Length: 435
Image (cartoon, rainbow, N blue to C red; front, side, top):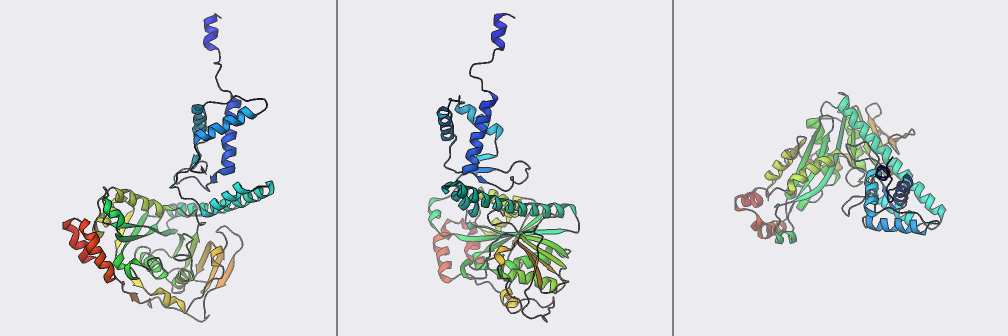
Protein backbone atom coordinates (compact mmCIF):
# COMPACT_ATOMS: atom_id res chain seq x y z
CA UNK A 1 0.00 0.00 0.00
CA UNK A 2 1.03 3.59 -0.36
CA UNK A 3 2.88 5.47 2.36
CA UNK A 4 -0.15 7.72 2.91
CA UNK A 5 -2.50 4.78 3.44
CA UNK A 6 -0.06 3.12 5.85
CA UNK A 7 0.20 6.28 7.96
CA UNK A 8 -3.58 6.67 7.98
CA UNK A 9 -4.10 3.22 9.51
CA UNK A 10 -1.09 3.37 11.80
CA UNK A 11 -1.92 3.20 15.54
CA UNK A 12 -1.33 6.58 17.26
CA UNK A 13 1.71 6.73 19.54
CA UNK A 14 -0.41 7.91 22.50
CA UNK A 15 -3.20 5.30 22.15
CA UNK A 16 -3.96 3.35 25.33
CA UNK A 17 -3.75 -0.42 25.45
CA UNK A 18 -5.81 -3.03 27.19
CA UNK A 19 -3.17 -3.26 29.92
CA UNK A 20 -3.45 0.49 30.53
CA UNK A 21 -7.21 0.17 31.01
CA UNK A 22 -6.78 -2.82 33.31
CA UNK A 23 -4.30 -0.96 35.52
CA UNK A 24 -6.68 1.98 35.94
CA UNK A 25 -9.58 -0.32 36.86
CA UNK A 26 -7.45 -2.25 39.35
CA UNK A 27 -6.23 0.97 40.97
CA UNK A 28 -9.77 2.36 41.44
CA UNK A 29 -11.06 -1.02 42.60
CA UNK A 30 -8.30 -1.46 45.17
CA UNK A 31 -8.84 2.08 46.46
CA UNK A 32 -12.58 1.37 46.83
CA UNK A 33 -11.95 -1.92 48.63
CA UNK A 34 -9.64 -0.19 51.07
CA UNK A 35 -11.56 3.01 51.81
CA UNK A 36 -15.03 2.67 50.29
CA UNK A 37 -18.37 1.97 52.01
CA UNK A 38 -20.10 -0.96 50.33
CA UNK A 39 -23.87 -0.66 50.05
CA UNK A 40 -25.99 -3.82 50.46
CA UNK A 41 -28.16 -3.27 47.37
CA UNK A 42 -28.53 -1.12 44.29
CA UNK A 43 -30.82 1.95 44.48
CA UNK A 44 -34.55 1.35 44.30
CA UNK A 45 -35.79 0.55 40.80
CA UNK A 46 -32.42 -0.70 39.56
CA UNK A 47 -30.99 -4.20 39.36
CA UNK A 48 -27.28 -3.59 38.84
CA UNK A 49 -24.14 -3.63 41.00
CA UNK A 50 -24.58 -2.21 44.54
CA UNK A 51 -22.77 1.14 44.81
CA UNK A 52 -19.56 1.75 46.73
CA UNK A 53 -19.20 5.21 48.25
CA UNK A 54 -15.76 6.74 48.65
CA UNK A 55 -15.15 9.34 51.40
CA UNK A 56 -16.53 12.76 50.51
CA UNK A 57 -13.08 14.40 50.77
CA UNK A 58 -11.89 12.20 47.89
CA UNK A 59 -11.37 13.90 44.50
CA UNK A 60 -10.72 12.35 41.13
CA UNK A 61 -7.83 14.75 40.57
CA UNK A 62 -6.04 13.58 43.69
CA UNK A 63 -6.74 9.94 42.86
CA UNK A 64 -5.25 10.48 39.41
CA UNK A 65 -2.12 11.99 40.98
CA UNK A 66 -1.77 8.95 43.25
CA UNK A 67 -2.27 6.70 40.24
CA UNK A 68 0.47 8.53 38.30
CA UNK A 69 2.86 8.23 41.26
CA UNK A 70 2.26 4.49 41.49
CA UNK A 71 2.99 4.13 37.76
CA UNK A 72 6.23 6.15 37.88
CA UNK A 73 7.51 4.38 41.01
CA UNK A 74 7.01 0.92 39.58
CA UNK A 75 9.99 -1.00 38.17
CA UNK A 76 10.09 -0.72 35.24
CA UNK A 77 8.09 2.46 34.86
CA UNK A 78 4.57 2.12 33.46
CA UNK A 79 2.87 4.57 31.15
CA UNK A 80 -0.05 6.35 32.82
CA UNK A 81 -3.19 7.74 31.18
CA UNK A 82 -4.26 11.38 31.26
CA UNK A 83 -6.74 12.81 33.74
CA UNK A 84 -9.55 13.01 31.17
CA UNK A 85 -9.01 9.37 30.15
CA UNK A 86 -8.83 8.38 33.83
CA UNK A 87 -12.26 9.94 34.44
CA UNK A 88 -13.68 8.41 31.25
CA UNK A 89 -12.55 4.91 32.19
CA UNK A 90 -13.92 5.36 35.70
CA UNK A 91 -17.39 6.45 34.55
CA UNK A 92 -17.50 3.84 31.76
CA UNK A 93 -16.11 0.75 33.47
CA UNK A 94 -16.87 1.33 37.16
CA UNK A 95 -19.89 3.66 37.50
CA UNK A 96 -20.96 1.95 40.74
CA UNK A 97 -17.93 3.44 42.55
CA UNK A 98 -18.91 6.98 43.52
CA UNK A 99 -17.69 9.77 45.72
CA UNK A 100 -20.15 10.37 48.54
CA UNK A 101 -21.58 13.83 49.07
CA UNK A 102 -21.58 15.29 52.60
CA UNK A 103 -25.38 14.87 52.70
CA UNK A 104 -25.43 11.13 51.94
CA UNK A 105 -26.76 9.01 54.83
CA UNK A 106 -24.47 6.22 55.94
CA UNK A 107 -24.86 3.34 58.33
CA UNK A 108 -23.11 4.05 61.64
CA UNK A 109 -21.93 0.44 61.86
CA UNK A 110 -20.51 0.54 58.33
CA UNK A 111 -18.75 3.82 59.09
CA UNK A 112 -17.25 2.47 62.29
CA UNK A 113 -16.07 -0.71 60.57
CA UNK A 114 -14.62 1.28 57.67
CA UNK A 115 -12.54 3.29 60.13
CA UNK A 116 -11.41 0.08 61.79
CA UNK A 117 -10.22 -1.18 58.40
CA UNK A 118 -8.38 2.07 57.70
CA UNK A 119 -6.77 2.13 61.15
CA UNK A 120 -5.77 -1.54 61.15
CA UNK A 121 -1.98 -1.99 61.31
CA UNK A 122 -1.45 -5.72 60.84
CA UNK A 123 -2.84 -7.83 58.04
CA UNK A 124 -4.66 -10.02 60.58
CA UNK A 125 -6.54 -7.03 62.03
CA UNK A 126 -7.42 -5.76 58.57
CA UNK A 127 -8.72 -9.17 57.47
CA UNK A 128 -10.76 -9.53 60.64
CA UNK A 129 -12.29 -6.06 60.17
CA UNK A 130 -13.06 -6.84 56.53
CA UNK A 131 -14.74 -10.11 57.53
CA UNK A 132 -16.90 -8.34 60.14
CA UNK A 133 -17.95 -5.67 57.65
CA UNK A 134 -18.75 -8.30 55.04
CA UNK A 135 -20.90 -10.20 57.52
CA UNK A 136 -22.78 -7.01 58.41
CA UNK A 137 -23.37 -6.16 54.75
CA UNK A 138 -24.55 -9.69 53.91
CA UNK A 139 -27.00 -9.61 56.83
CA UNK A 140 -28.34 -6.24 55.63
CA UNK A 141 -28.60 -7.65 52.10
CA UNK A 142 -30.65 -10.64 53.29
CA UNK A 143 -33.06 -8.42 55.20
CA UNK A 144 -33.32 -6.17 52.15
CA UNK A 145 -34.14 -9.19 49.97
CA UNK A 146 -36.86 -10.18 52.45
CA UNK A 147 -38.38 -6.70 52.21
CA UNK A 148 -38.32 -6.80 48.40
CA UNK A 149 -39.93 -10.26 48.45
CA UNK A 150 -42.74 -8.90 50.64
CA UNK A 151 -43.30 -6.03 48.20
CA UNK A 152 -43.41 -8.39 45.23
CA UNK A 153 -45.84 -10.78 46.93
CA UNK A 154 -48.17 -7.93 47.95
CA UNK A 155 -48.34 -6.82 44.30
CA UNK A 156 -48.84 -10.29 42.85
CA UNK A 157 -50.94 -12.13 45.46
CA UNK A 158 -54.43 -10.92 46.36
CA UNK A 159 -54.45 -12.67 49.73
CA UNK A 160 -51.08 -11.37 50.88
CA UNK A 161 -50.93 -7.99 52.62
CA UNK A 162 -47.82 -6.02 53.50
CA UNK A 163 -47.52 -2.71 55.33
CA UNK A 164 -44.68 -0.37 56.29
CA UNK A 165 -44.62 2.53 58.73
CA UNK A 166 -42.08 5.16 59.70
CA UNK A 167 -41.67 8.78 60.76
CA UNK A 168 -40.52 11.62 58.55
CA UNK A 169 -38.44 14.59 59.61
CA UNK A 170 -40.84 17.30 60.77
CA UNK A 171 -41.63 20.36 58.68
CA UNK A 172 -42.10 23.97 59.79
CA UNK A 173 -44.91 26.47 59.32
CA UNK A 174 -44.89 29.01 57.87
CA UNK A 175 -42.68 27.95 54.99
CA UNK A 176 -41.83 30.11 51.98
CA UNK A 177 -40.09 29.03 48.81
CA UNK A 178 -38.12 32.27 49.09
CA UNK A 179 -36.94 32.08 52.68
CA UNK A 180 -36.95 35.35 54.62
CA UNK A 181 -33.81 35.81 56.70
CA UNK A 182 -35.35 36.49 60.15
CA UNK A 183 -37.42 33.27 59.99
CA UNK A 184 -34.21 31.25 60.14
CA UNK A 185 -33.65 32.37 63.76
CA UNK A 186 -37.22 31.66 64.97
CA UNK A 187 -38.65 28.47 66.41
CA UNK A 188 -41.46 27.91 63.94
CA UNK A 189 -44.51 25.73 64.39
CA UNK A 190 -43.57 22.09 63.87
CA UNK A 191 -45.72 19.54 62.07
CA UNK A 192 -44.66 15.91 62.34
CA UNK A 193 -45.50 13.31 59.70
CA UNK A 194 -46.09 9.61 60.28
CA UNK A 195 -46.38 7.42 57.18
CA UNK A 196 -48.28 4.13 56.98
CA UNK A 197 -47.95 2.48 53.57
CA UNK A 198 -50.29 -0.18 52.18
CA UNK A 199 -47.94 -1.70 49.62
CA UNK A 200 -50.33 -3.83 47.60
CA UNK A 201 -52.60 -0.99 46.44
CA UNK A 202 -50.23 1.08 46.71
CA UNK A 203 -51.34 3.81 49.10
CA UNK A 204 -49.57 5.81 51.80
CA UNK A 205 -51.43 7.40 54.70
CA UNK A 206 -49.53 10.45 55.97
CA UNK A 207 -50.63 11.51 59.47
CA UNK A 208 -50.06 15.25 59.91
CA UNK A 209 -49.58 16.03 63.61
CA UNK A 210 -49.57 19.66 64.65
CA UNK A 211 -47.88 20.83 67.84
CA UNK A 212 -51.14 21.30 69.71
CA UNK A 213 -52.47 17.88 68.62
CA UNK A 214 -49.79 15.67 70.20
CA UNK A 215 -50.04 13.45 73.27
CA UNK A 216 -47.56 15.61 75.18
CA UNK A 217 -47.50 19.35 75.57
CA UNK A 218 -45.88 21.53 72.88
CA UNK A 219 -45.46 18.71 70.36
CA UNK A 220 -43.86 16.14 72.69
CA UNK A 221 -44.43 12.37 73.05
CA UNK A 222 -45.34 11.93 69.39
CA UNK A 223 -42.79 9.13 68.93
CA UNK A 224 -43.84 7.20 72.02
CA UNK A 225 -45.75 3.89 72.04
CA UNK A 226 -49.12 5.51 72.73
CA UNK A 227 -48.84 7.70 69.63
CA UNK A 228 -47.28 5.15 67.26
CA UNK A 229 -49.65 2.30 68.12
CA UNK A 230 -52.69 4.61 68.02
CA UNK A 231 -51.95 5.58 64.41
CA UNK A 232 -51.09 2.02 63.34
CA UNK A 233 -54.29 0.75 64.99
CA UNK A 234 -56.45 3.35 63.23
CA UNK A 235 -54.87 2.55 59.85
CA UNK A 236 -55.44 -1.20 60.30
CA UNK A 237 -59.03 -0.70 61.48
CA UNK A 238 -60.05 1.76 58.76
CA UNK A 239 -58.10 0.66 55.69
CA UNK A 240 -56.95 -2.94 56.21
CA UNK A 241 -59.98 -4.82 57.52
CA UNK A 242 -59.56 -7.59 54.91
CA UNK A 243 -56.02 -8.37 56.09
CA UNK A 244 -56.56 -11.44 58.26
CA UNK A 245 -52.88 -12.30 57.73
CA UNK A 246 -50.26 -9.67 57.02
CA UNK A 247 -46.58 -8.75 57.28
CA UNK A 248 -45.49 -5.35 58.50
CA UNK A 249 -42.07 -3.70 58.32
CA UNK A 250 -40.64 -0.97 60.56
CA UNK A 251 -37.22 0.41 61.34
CA UNK A 252 -35.07 -0.69 64.28
CA UNK A 253 -35.78 2.26 66.60
CA UNK A 254 -36.31 0.77 70.08
CA UNK A 255 -38.06 3.85 71.44
CA UNK A 256 -40.96 3.92 68.98
CA UNK A 257 -41.14 0.56 67.18
CA UNK A 258 -39.01 -2.17 68.73
CA UNK A 259 -40.39 -2.35 72.25
CA UNK A 260 -42.63 -4.52 74.38
CA UNK A 261 -45.71 -2.36 73.79
CA UNK A 262 -45.72 -2.81 70.01
CA UNK A 263 -45.24 -6.57 70.42
CA UNK A 264 -48.00 -6.64 73.03
CA UNK A 265 -50.33 -4.76 70.68
CA UNK A 266 -49.86 -7.26 67.84
CA UNK A 267 -50.35 -10.13 70.29
CA UNK A 268 -53.54 -8.46 71.54
CA UNK A 269 -54.83 -8.27 67.96
CA UNK A 270 -54.41 -12.01 67.29
CA UNK A 271 -55.78 -12.95 70.73
CA UNK A 272 -58.93 -10.91 70.12
CA UNK A 273 -59.55 -12.48 66.70
CA UNK A 274 -58.88 -9.34 64.68
CA UNK A 275 -56.07 -11.13 62.81
CA UNK A 276 -54.91 -14.72 62.44
CA UNK A 277 -51.20 -14.28 61.70
CA UNK A 278 -49.00 -11.17 61.97
CA UNK A 279 -45.35 -11.06 60.91
CA UNK A 280 -43.41 -8.10 62.29
CA UNK A 281 -40.09 -7.59 60.47
CA UNK A 282 -37.25 -5.09 60.56
CA UNK A 283 -34.30 -4.29 58.36
CA UNK A 284 -30.82 -3.75 59.73
CA UNK A 285 -30.34 -0.35 61.35
CA UNK A 286 -28.72 2.05 58.90
CA UNK A 287 -29.99 0.02 55.91
CA UNK A 288 -33.73 0.47 56.46
CA UNK A 289 -34.73 2.53 53.44
CA UNK A 290 -38.21 1.67 52.23
CA UNK A 291 -41.04 2.93 50.03
CA UNK A 292 -42.38 5.09 52.86
CA UNK A 293 -39.23 7.19 52.46
CA UNK A 294 -40.05 7.52 48.77
CA UNK A 295 -43.48 8.93 49.65
CA UNK A 296 -41.84 11.39 52.06
CA UNK A 297 -39.42 12.45 49.32
CA UNK A 298 -42.32 13.33 47.01
CA UNK A 299 -43.85 15.45 49.78
CA UNK A 300 -40.60 17.27 50.53
CA UNK A 301 -39.99 17.98 46.85
CA UNK A 302 -43.32 19.82 46.51
CA UNK A 303 -43.04 21.39 49.97
CA UNK A 304 -39.68 23.00 49.20
CA UNK A 305 -41.03 25.01 46.29
CA UNK A 306 -44.44 25.89 47.76
CA UNK A 307 -45.53 28.61 50.16
CA UNK A 308 -47.17 26.78 53.09
CA UNK A 309 -48.57 28.78 55.98
CA UNK A 310 -51.37 26.64 57.40
CA UNK A 311 -52.04 22.98 58.05
CA UNK A 312 -54.71 23.00 55.36
CA UNK A 313 -52.16 24.12 52.77
CA UNK A 314 -49.76 21.41 53.96
CA UNK A 315 -52.55 18.87 53.48
CA UNK A 316 -52.93 20.02 49.88
CA UNK A 317 -49.17 19.64 49.37
CA UNK A 318 -49.31 16.04 50.59
CA UNK A 319 -52.29 15.12 48.43
CA UNK A 320 -50.85 16.57 45.24
CA UNK A 321 -47.29 15.32 45.81
CA UNK A 322 -48.07 11.83 44.50
CA UNK A 323 -51.08 9.76 43.53
CA UNK A 324 -50.23 7.32 46.33
CA UNK A 325 -49.95 9.95 49.09
CA UNK A 326 -53.02 10.72 51.20
CA UNK A 327 -53.07 13.21 54.08
CA UNK A 328 -54.76 12.26 57.36
CA UNK A 329 -55.49 15.04 59.84
CA UNK A 330 -56.39 14.91 63.49
CA UNK A 331 -59.02 14.16 64.84
CA UNK A 332 -59.71 11.50 62.20
CA UNK A 333 -57.88 9.15 64.54
CA UNK A 334 -57.80 9.19 68.35
CA UNK A 335 -54.86 8.93 70.71
CA UNK A 336 -55.35 5.97 73.05
CA UNK A 337 -53.79 5.06 76.39
CA UNK A 338 -52.22 1.84 75.11
CA UNK A 339 -49.26 1.71 77.51
CA UNK A 340 -51.52 1.46 80.54
CA UNK A 341 -53.87 -0.88 78.70
CA UNK A 342 -51.09 -3.36 77.83
CA UNK A 343 -48.69 -2.83 80.74
CA UNK A 344 -50.23 -5.21 83.22
CA UNK A 345 -51.00 -7.99 80.75
CA UNK A 346 -47.76 -8.49 78.78
CA UNK A 347 -44.07 -8.63 79.62
CA UNK A 348 -40.97 -7.67 77.67
CA UNK A 349 -38.86 -9.92 75.45
CA UNK A 350 -35.34 -10.17 76.84
CA UNK A 351 -32.68 -9.24 74.31
CA UNK A 352 -35.27 -7.81 71.93
CA UNK A 353 -32.69 -5.74 70.02
CA UNK A 354 -30.93 -8.78 68.55
CA UNK A 355 -34.12 -10.09 66.88
CA UNK A 356 -35.31 -8.92 63.45
CA UNK A 357 -38.37 -11.15 63.03
CA UNK A 358 -41.47 -11.64 65.24
CA UNK A 359 -44.51 -13.77 64.45
CA UNK A 360 -47.85 -13.81 66.26
CA UNK A 361 -50.53 -16.44 65.57
CA UNK A 362 -54.01 -17.03 66.93
CA UNK A 363 -53.17 -20.73 67.34
CA UNK A 364 -50.53 -19.89 69.96
CA UNK A 365 -52.00 -17.16 72.18
CA UNK A 366 -49.36 -15.36 74.18
CA UNK A 367 -46.45 -16.96 72.30
CA UNK A 368 -44.28 -14.85 70.00
CA UNK A 369 -41.91 -16.63 67.61
CA UNK A 370 -38.63 -14.75 67.16
CA UNK A 371 -35.63 -15.05 64.84
CA UNK A 372 -32.31 -13.26 64.79
CA UNK A 373 -32.81 -12.73 61.03
CA UNK A 374 -35.88 -13.23 58.86
CA UNK A 375 -34.32 -16.16 56.97
CA UNK A 376 -32.85 -17.82 60.06
CA UNK A 377 -33.83 -21.49 60.35
CA UNK A 378 -33.57 -21.40 64.14
CA UNK A 379 -36.69 -20.08 65.84
CA UNK A 380 -37.37 -19.38 69.48
CA UNK A 381 -40.81 -19.25 71.09
CA UNK A 382 -41.24 -16.78 73.95
CA UNK A 383 -44.31 -16.31 76.11
CA UNK A 384 -45.04 -12.64 76.74
CA UNK A 385 -48.25 -13.11 78.75
CA UNK A 386 -47.89 -12.29 82.42
CA UNK A 387 -50.79 -14.59 83.28
CA UNK A 388 -51.47 -17.66 81.13
CA UNK A 389 -55.21 -17.46 81.76
CA UNK A 390 -55.51 -13.92 80.39
CA UNK A 391 -58.01 -13.51 77.57
CA UNK A 392 -59.28 -10.37 75.83
CA UNK A 393 -62.35 -9.09 74.00
CA UNK A 394 -62.08 -7.08 70.81
CA UNK A 395 -64.87 -4.77 71.98
CA UNK A 396 -62.80 -3.62 74.97
CA UNK A 397 -60.41 -1.00 73.68
CA UNK A 398 -58.04 1.46 75.37
CA UNK A 399 -59.42 4.75 76.59
CA UNK A 400 -58.89 7.83 74.38
CA UNK A 401 -56.34 10.49 75.35
CA UNK A 402 -56.98 14.16 74.75
CA UNK A 403 -54.12 16.18 73.20
CA UNK A 404 -52.18 18.24 75.70
CA UNK A 405 -52.15 21.32 73.46
CA UNK A 406 -49.74 24.23 73.69
CA UNK A 407 -48.43 25.91 76.79
CA UNK A 408 -49.25 29.57 77.34
CA UNK A 409 -45.60 30.45 76.80
CA UNK A 410 -45.51 28.69 73.41
CA UNK A 411 -48.77 30.32 72.30
CA UNK A 412 -47.45 33.75 73.20
CA UNK A 413 -44.21 33.15 71.32
CA UNK A 414 -45.99 31.99 68.15
CA UNK A 415 -48.42 34.88 68.28
CA UNK A 416 -45.82 37.59 68.89
CA UNK A 417 -42.78 36.33 66.98
CA UNK A 418 -44.02 34.06 64.17
CA UNK A 419 -47.49 35.38 63.32
CA UNK A 420 -46.20 38.63 61.71
CA UNK A 421 -44.54 36.55 58.97
CA UNK A 422 -47.85 34.90 58.02
CA UNK A 423 -49.93 36.59 55.36
CA UNK A 424 -52.92 38.49 56.84
CA UNK A 425 -55.45 36.21 55.15
CA UNK A 426 -54.10 33.19 57.07
CA UNK A 427 -53.17 34.72 60.43
CA UNK A 428 -56.44 33.83 62.11
CA UNK A 429 -56.14 30.21 61.04
CA UNK A 430 -52.49 30.08 62.08
CA UNK A 431 -52.99 31.50 65.58
CA UNK A 432 -56.70 30.97 66.12
CA UNK A 433 -58.13 27.67 65.00
CA UNK A 434 -55.01 25.52 65.29
CA UNK A 435 -53.42 27.34 68.22
